[in-house]
Picture (tube, one colour):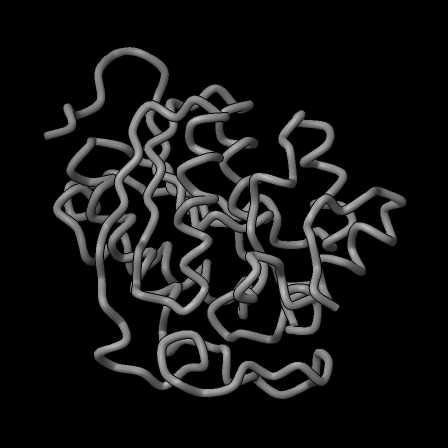
Length: 231
């Protein structure tokens, strides 16, 4: 069992998927002086390479706690990441893609909130982005603001007058700026994993939405992306 918060620096619970955005988000929480409790959800996604990436990032950042929580969302399906559906490779469109996992960030933030309350922590970090992303509704600022209200209503801590703060420090950053933040924080992007459809040789597909956004971001920032792409 992980001990609750002491009188040391405050704890922040950070959702750490293993992707570039979550890596930078965890680095920013650490830079801000928080003790980082990293939560990785192993939801039985097809891109399970993320879980290994999350372990590497947690070790490199030096988080205080790291929980990898199993949650088999393949039982629900409904997404190319949790069912045997093809991952789109024809470019980032304007519609919500089939890689959207139903209510994923709502579910994940609820678990983050539960752990934060158990730890006596008041700060939650999530690496959602509303600029260079695939149009997922649970990445919008309105969702983050709404969840902050929900956290107050749904918890013993909130009922007692304590406020939770939902930090989304990448909310209004483009992917190029996020790549630059990784460099500034001295976090190796090679540790992170973005691809929705890893290839059998261990490379990233290079064509899914996430690969395209990452590659374009690094190119726009004038940085070398260390990821190995099949295409």
